[in-house]
Image (cartoon, rainbow, N blue to C red; front, side):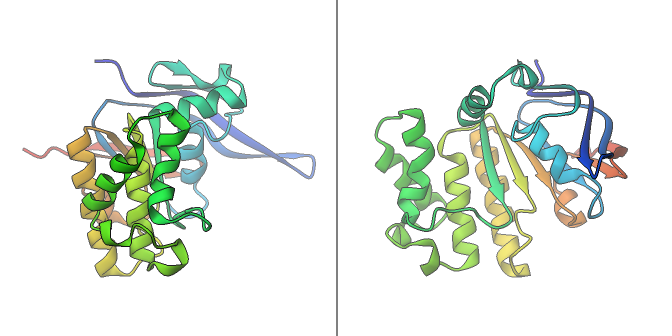
Length: 229
């Protein structure tokens, strides 16, 4: 089975005041389809930068990022956006919902971009799955943090992504709400057969995935598979 993601000799160097700051240094790993992976590490270790490179939100300074068999470094900005829209779902710490759109409309956006059919009914079904069918016409400002994250979850799964990237998905939520969101992420992910990659400093959350990649000082410190025998 082909890997959904291949990272080969990837480095990221930012130029600052005429000097190069190496954030990621020669990263290598692959991820199999339908697997669950956590990327962990201290603040400033490069894990969010790595997530951005994996998802095609940014370009590596060197090396190759292959997503679903597509070499991202060869693509233009528009072509990478098209790949993201077709294959990738996102969940962010700060939700990133569009404030002028209702919950339902936020979930419909990726479907509209893909030219999907029956987008309203599909979006409503997803909101129902995350327990928010009765909040469909509410705007983000009218929703709690946990409700906003559930809307972003429904939106992330709306285009049936091959791979879902979650960047500190519970970072802005209290413990009880976090637990509900985590359960939803894994339940939706299992039902959809999506590959799940979570960036987190929460080791309990990382322990729920099948594999943990630890980043330290811009390099892979350890890469461990967990067996659920």
